Amino acid sequence: INPQKDEYATDVHWGSEMTYAYFRLIHGRNSIDNLGYQLNNYVHYDIALVNAMWDGERMMYGDGGGEYWPHPLTSIEIVGHETTHGLISFTADLNWENNEIGGLNESFCDIFGKAIESYAKPGDWSWLIGEDVEHVIRSMSNPSDYYSPDTYDGDWWMDDESAHVLAGVQNHWFYLLTEGGTGTNDIGDSYSVTGIGMDAASAIAFRNLTVYLTPYSNYNDARFFAIQSAIDLYGACSLEAEQTTNAWYAVGVGEEYTDEVFANFTPSASEWCEAPFTVAFANSSINGGEFLWDFGDGSTSTDLNPIHTYTAPGLYDVKLTADGGLCGIDDTISVGAILVDPTADCSIILPTSGIAATQKSCAGTLFDSGGPTGDYGANEFSKVTIAPVGAVGVTLNFVEFDINGIWGCSDDNLKIYDGPNEDSPLIDTYCNAYVPSTINSSGSAITLVFKSDSYVNSAGFKMNWTCTEGVSEIDENSENEITIYPNPTNGTLTINTGKIDFGSIEITDALGKLIVTLPIQSTLSYFDFSAHNAKGIYFVKVKDGNGNLLKTEKVVLY
Image 1 (cartoon, rainbow, N blue to C red):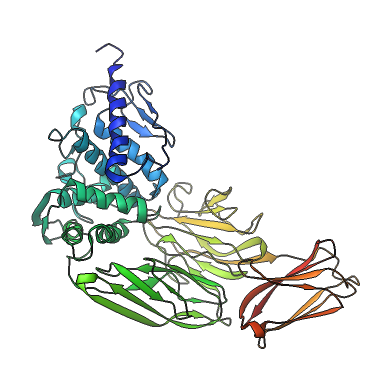
Image 2: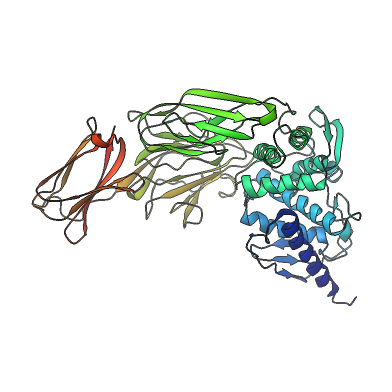
């Protein structure tokens, strides 16, 4: 021991070794990125810093200070906790802008901090967090002892509480799943959970985090996919699946376990104005181990939560069969679940959380979650990307806008990015303190991200979007005017190339796949889609003899 406390560097080094060994030997993961990521740790970070952190690239540990934090924050559970933040950044990447989602982020770090401690120090660990640095801040066995909720929407639960506080619910779930317990929770539900042990409980939590959860997953998602993880690992109707369900019920999320199979699903959207129409199907089945989807257009899938694209107008029935093995089998059919109607209005309402389907139409209307007449809700976090097929630009025109922004857009706000995701350049952040009117993208896509807090909610927004499609690179008023005549009912296409009698015509589908290349041999060229039984959206590109693009036009055949 020396005045500089350099021996704590040894503690961190050992803790990092044990953390790497735990993830590699117990879960088969080669470091936090599964590619051997180098775990760099820095001690003595800042002067008297009472904190430890993952900064996106490395772990850093403060020396503590004062009466309540007498030791550096370098215990093995803290090393495991901070390293798990790195693991999360490479997997679910649970988003910190929403307190509930941030609570899940912190909880997984507590869970694996404890799992790593029990792995490295069997028989010499506890469910208290901070005990080894003589400052307990949380308890996984009794979260309420440290002012953290053990029940969703129960005592100490407040939507605007910090992520560290809201971690208590999943922390207690993990404790009960590991150790078992009986009692009555804060919302009056009596429960009984049989513990399945640390190995099985941590395997379920690890699969949930690394396979299923996304940046926008909330507590309901964590429950559903934890149960699915247990089924994946141990089978439907297994003890592990049963107790995973009952432990969530004990902390106020979801219902008690039943051994019946129940097939159920929800589409991300049910109606759109043109094809292609991409729909994400959210599976909410109970006790299903294997799944078979029939999308009603001749396509099927065995994915848990498939994403399917409808390529032609029509009304489609969707059927889901859930096979629970020894639990049984069930199916459900949603008649007319999906409608692709070229005469319908292209409008979409944002979900309260999560990612809406990418909008590929060249024009449409977007509402907040309250729709045309309602207010948006509390603690929402959702996004949508508008990326029309064949577009070279997107324009947003705001018709209505009322987003509470008392604190300068730091509470409720709408962020708009110039591109297909949040890594694209931020155009700006908008609220009532800064209201948008017309916004133009610099490219083919634009992304909107909406966030609200737990306080005042407002009417929200309505905006229309339009796109700029590929245009002719020659003067359309000249003798070389190119005109494309689609006949959508019989599936034929005529292209008048004016005085251009050389070059080619390329026809691609909505995804850019080349359908046919036609040589330009006279002023009129003709193509019959009906012979291919091909309905949908196509792009016609006319090129001169040197391959220069002269015109692009979208064609809809139905």
